[in-house]
Length: 98
Image (cartoon, rainbow, N blue to C red; front, side):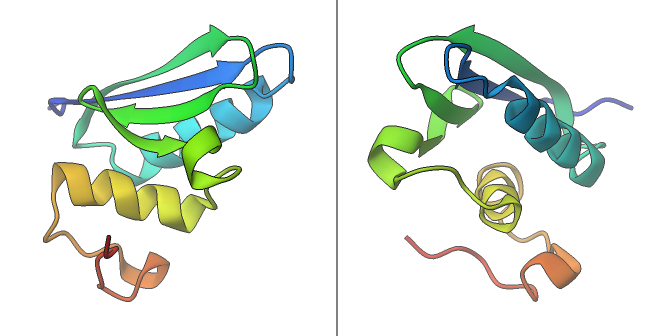
């Protein structure tokens, strides 16, 4: 059974961020395998690195300052698709606070 949520990762090809983006996509697909319908890698330019869940931006390199660690990224994805879901060792069952 496939999930219904979509994750889009926008990354800069000029900056060579494909491998970082692909690794993050792999981590998200592994953690949320039943929840996600797709994870797409979207090449761009100009230093872009953004992650969107269901068209809502949850991370922006420009606004959030750099790249998320995988723990933070998983927490933010979880908070969008299933806020009550525990992530076990990733966050000790606590949600990200804004």
